[in-house]
Image (cartoon, rainbow, N blue to C red; front, side, top):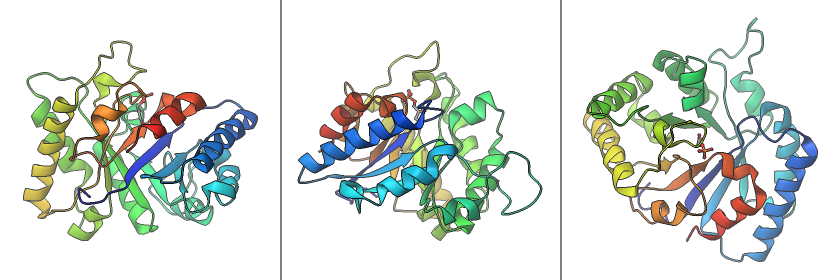
Length: 258
Ligand code: 13P
């Protein structure tokens, strides 16, 4: 979506915060900030853990969040119903007012062993249930093979989608080697992120004749680096992890989205 003026900011709370009281504090703080800012050059999505979804959804319908922020989930199961212990289905999420669903997050891919095939099935479940998939892709290491790794991951992740379905996806490029929870994390640069985004874009353009994209950057975004990434025309927004549950830091990030 290179032509869209509004940037997208997705707060991926991961398995945080520990209590609802803390979650409410974050939302109150962001709400106060939104009240103080007249022009919002971003659309906001909160992706809390499943246990907080319903309550966050209620808060987002009130006050300054109304029409400003949407509800997102961090995961989905690929079947719509069935005996699947521990899983949450697309219809369940959709009934709660969830509009966005993250699939293929690197923590699920690498810590929980989610394959491209599983991510592909989850992606299709999001589309089938008429929500917007936030599809995470990214190489684990930046070595000589990263371009091939990225292309293979993208090919398998988006396999079988139609052009129109692909157009509904938000693609979050997450270089796993830059994510803060990685003990060997090192900072990414806008140049390197754009190199990867172009590889993904060219691949999808060639294979799906896609010309409209919506790319988020998700490699450890903080108030220190957000301005550098967001000003790139190839980057339509950011997927913020750890910094999105630190209320002061998150508001600082929002203040830098121009
Ligand atoms: P951090 O922002 O915590 O480094 O994580 C990035 C990420 O995983 C976004 O979903």
